[in-house]
Amino acid sequence: MRPARTIVVAALLIAASLARATEIPQAEPQSGYSFMTSDTQAMQNDDSANPGMLWVLDGEALWNGKAGAARKACADCHNDARASMKGVAARYPAFDKTLGRPVDLEQRINLCRIQQQQATPLPYESRDLLALTALVARQSREVAIETGADPQLAPFIAKGRDLFMQRQGQLNLGCANCHDDNWDKRLAGAAITQGHPTGYPLYRLEWQSLGSLQRRLRACISGIRAQPYDYGAPELVELELYLMSRARGMPIETPAVRP
Amino acid sequence: MPSALINVPAKARRGEIIEIKTLMSHIMETGYRHTAEGEVVPRDIITSFTCRYNGVEIFRADLFPAIAANPFISFFTVANESGKFDFEWIGDNGFAATASASITVE
Image (tube, rainbow over all chains, first blue to last red; front, top):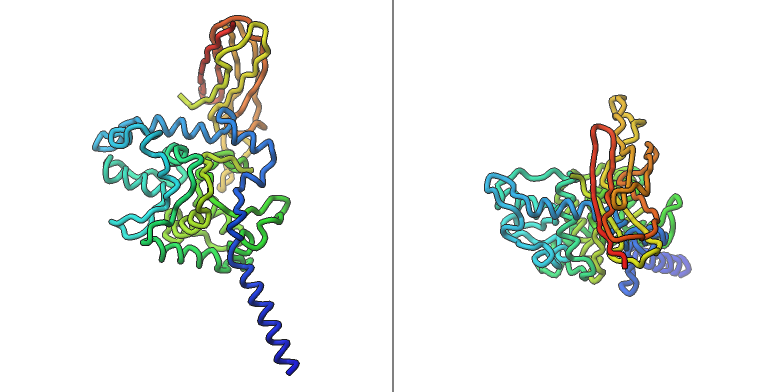
């Protein structure tokens, strides 16, 4: 009788720890912003001190410039980005019917370049792609994230969630081990945070540059000593999609500043 | 022309102390880093920043390799008369950028 009871208790304890490893209570999602020092917050708040705004300015010039064999500018179809792009970033990654899979904002911009402007796609993390993405996402500032509302995305969100939970790499860690279980603690002096992608592309002081969510994810994957997926890999887009759907309801902060 | 962000109050009272904030887009490569092949990445920094108020120099700064990318420079001055602030950044490899902002003093 006694061994059986021990097993039951052990099973309950394991069940409890597994339950904890699932999700943060939805009542208290916290943006990375709330973990920063007041100095860094002030830098993000002031558009004339936020270095991310330099990319938004560059993006405005690119938006109005003609490109590709079609000699078309983004503005020729979409007019003023401030009106036409409002709320768009809050819905991405979104399902693309032609490709039959989700695409993120960077991929959407490059699809537009290839199909409409007949131009070469911009490389990931290039200044121009970051600038255009920052300009588009900037128009959704303060808009609540609603990614994942499309039912066609459900299987891809599930794949992203599996990847988020899966342990991998030499350190044998999954995203959830830090960002669900230990977000209120610190790692080597830095806040761990809940991992909500509310401000991408964002200016990281450590990068001294704007960077995409995929750059951040690849850095995290190297950190657990796993092999990072290539830029644009379906796994990274699914992870982006899961993270955005996990942050549903939180306001977009682009271009955010992070330490 | 590289992007710059300038924050000068549009209006001020005569004699008021105003804050001017500038942010210039620049990589500020120190010249101390090496590539994976061991070659030095050549220095590429802004070396000088100047602000003129109606043609008169009111602020100048020399910049050095330890300054972060996209240098943010803020300073104070006294608003004496309506007019124009002209900003100039000069750096390695022939880098030169200008910007300006107007102020109305009442």
